[in-house]
Length: 314
Image (cartoon, rainbow, N blue to C red):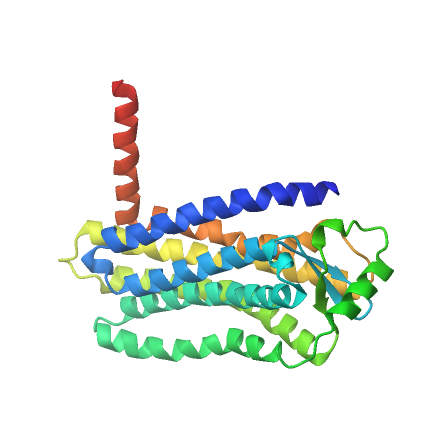
C-alpha cells in the first residue's frame, strides 16, 4: 500500500471513535445540563449534533479518495461501503457533501437566532424573524436533487481511472465507481453552489456575530445578572467560531478540487482531502460547544476535578 493509504487506514478509526465519544457526550450535556436561559437553544443543539454525527459517520463509511480523469471522477472508497458496491459508495459520497453544507447552515441558523434574540426582546418576534432562514436549506436540498438527474456508469469510471492512472495502487478499493461526467452542468452546479456556501457561511456569520455582540450590550437590562451576560456573550463567540471553521476546512477543499479537476495535474494528497477536511469540523464543533456553552464547561470541569481528586487521594 501507498504511505497515504496506510496513514488514512489508521486515521479514520481513531477519528470516528473520537467523534462518537464527543457527540455522545454532547447529547448527554444537552439533555442534562442545558439551563433554562438556553432552553430554546436545545433544539438547535440537537439538530447540529445529529447532523455532525451523521457527517462523521458518512466520512468513516466512505473514506473517499477523489481521482479526476479527463471526463469522469473516480471515487476510491476504503470504508466498508466498498463491500456493498460502487452505487452505495456514490450515494454516501453525495450525502457527505450535502451534510457538509447542512452542518454549516445549521450553525449559521443558530447564530442568526441568537442575533435576533439579542435584537428582539420578545421571543415570539425573534422566532418569527428567524423562520425565513429556513429558505437556506434549499441549497443542500437542490444539490441532493441535482445529483440524481444524470445517469452514472460506474464500470466506465473504473476503466477510465485505471487507464489514465495505471501507476496507482487499486487493490484495496475493490470494484469502485464514481461520477461518469464530472464536467457537465449538473456537476459544475453542485461544485459552484457548495463552494459559494462555504464562503457565504463564515462571511455572513461574522457580520451577525458583530451585530449580536453590540445588541447584547445595549439590550441587557440592569437586572440581568453578570453570569447570564457572560453566558450569552460566550455562546455568541462560540457560534461565530463554529461558522468560521469552513474558512479553514471547506475553502481549501474547493481550491484543491478545482486545481485537480481543471489543471490536468493531480496532487496526490489533495485526492484525500475532501472526505478528510469536510468531516474534520465534526471533531471541533462539539469541543467548541463544550467550552463556550458555560453550563457544559462547568459540568465537564466538575467531572474532571472529581476524577483528579480520586486519582490523587489514592
